[in-house]
Length: 106
Image (cartoon, rainbow, N blue to C red):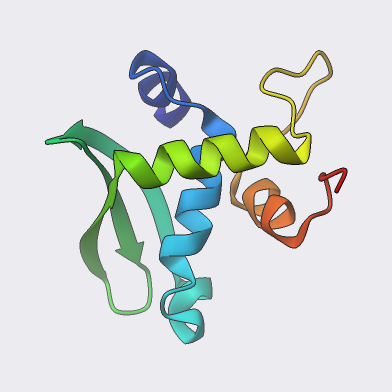
């Protein structure tokens, strides 16, 4: 369902997964207990819903669209393909691998 919302808003799922990693790593000691999910776009910001399984709490985090565009361009420049013709699982682990440079050609 989340991927449908992402694509309906014209966003790139690889970029949104990188954003989730960046959000969750703001508090690295809690990252394994949290799940980030795309929520909506409002007022030129992307809102993510963060669920903390340990604390049993929900939070929101907002990212400016300009940050989304910057990451999208940096991924493009690094050689990450916008579309793939092989099956890829584009999830938070994929986003983390992009940040580590696994799929980059630079």
